[in-house]
Image (cartoon, rainbow, N blue to C red; front, side):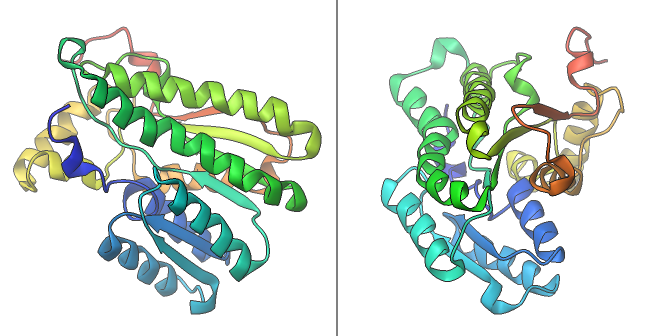
Length: 262
């Protein structure tokens, strides 16, 4: 899992799907608590939310590492202090870190499961008492990789399968108390991760996008806005009888799992 520490900041509300969801919620007038490791990118997301019409007193940013219990506690405590309640929890923290089984070390397992799984479970535990009061809901960001194998991404696939299992367990455990829990499982989506993977080279990025597109029946990659819309739907009253589901937003990537791109 070489280079994983370099990309550790790619999570939370500071970029990609998390940032896209935050801006969409802002457009719909929701108060927001945003978190991420990268302060500059988190501030950029906050600015986009304000530009979308959100008032300054309706957004809170908490800079920190979501794998740290102190950060998780600070996020929940400050959110409740500022807004008085928690209606929706979007567990978006996570990272794609490629690694062949033969190269996996114990520290790689600890790193990826701490971020992609443990942080989700522990933050959910902290949020549940407040979600119970609000009869709120949880949306976990999983991946199409939870049910199909991606080459050289064994640990990542394992963590996303764990998120799907956790989604169903939480939906079962908290359903009678009025909390809905679902997950969104995207295919390949155009996020900053791909740009950084090719060093920002626009020509290489287009080639990477084209290569990824061939693995999807729709012959293109997804956009962050498309995933954000699905998150917003599951979090809304329009999905009031939807719980324990894994909703794929993958351009039929799963349907192409047994096919070879050419």
